[in-house]
Length: 526
Image (cartoon, rainbow, N blue to C red; front, top):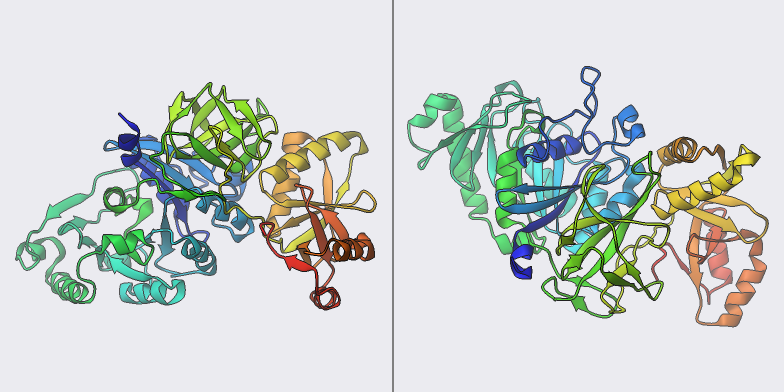
């Protein structure tokens, strides 16, 4: 197959949601339908010893939450699907934001009981910034939840996107009987089963056929006919271009834990979702069909295999063909690297690959050469845009609890910061180091991983820092004067950029007023 054919058969998407909406369960079921796994695991379960395939880190199994993005690839009906399961927990939002730069579209999971939640709103804002196409899956229809019309209204109102239902539920909770597909005019009957993959599908060329009563009863048949007529008047046929432009979100209903509505979602998704898209570098727009290879690193993970202590950089291929054993140009370091090992992913399971195409996510074994945001190419100097660091919310000073393990602590902190787990700030005066995170739970994860992966012990002690601000100025003298006067409060981030550590909101405002020639930035990309 040529480059264009390889691109046409690829789909790369992320799954986003608020914690506990069923995102990892849906991921498992998509893998099940794709034949990638034989049996789905549950994220939380005391009865079975089989954990969700995408939650493979030890701390994820203990907590029953996702704390890192998992990458999984599988073949389905002649298509190559690259699926990224993101952490739903807001404490790990930065990993999710970065992952959204590497996908072409998104499936958003909404819990029909709780509706749209705050983390979903934040993630949708990131999707809106990039006009990422979104499909919504309203989950847990076999539980007593909100009215479907109210859910559609809530998605439109709170997420600022127009919806277009492609399936419609018949009943809810105990009375949930299945869904009617508005897309292909078929009836899918619900039978709870966590193991069985098939759904009983009935083709109904005419919804007014008396056969409908046979399957769902007279009352539900009449209600469904009313609903379908109303929905047709309201929404008409799906405008696929409006979906691809990020203006309309198709909506499906189902129950991921019971494998219900998942196959329909997957089948329709593959028909309408975008193939790998063009992406911008700081110099130009790069089309996936260009012959020359380019790609960017959006994630780095240390110790994926505890036995080998290896570090893997996740690369999204944007154009051309990747070939193992080739020399590729590293734009930040301005030199070429020979890529002798590359892997494809199935959560933490990996297999060596010799070639890959636009849309694919591959892993490169790394000895410390790659950072998040790095671009690789066949010689072109442009860098892919859009992977900033955000100013953290909570700051703690790092205290080494074992002087004999100082080197291990340094190595552990540097590697975890390269992953983007948190941000490290080293003060210019003294040898103090502070870690900044989005949420409290990240400190527990860092502490746990330092101990278990590096043998280092550290405490994280609260310090008075309200905001870390990157700063710049057009006037070098004014910049030097600012640095001299605030030396005690100035640190460097992991890339060596200067950062002002403001102790309080009021003090930051006062400093901004006193130094009008200094520009303060709350993301590292400026």
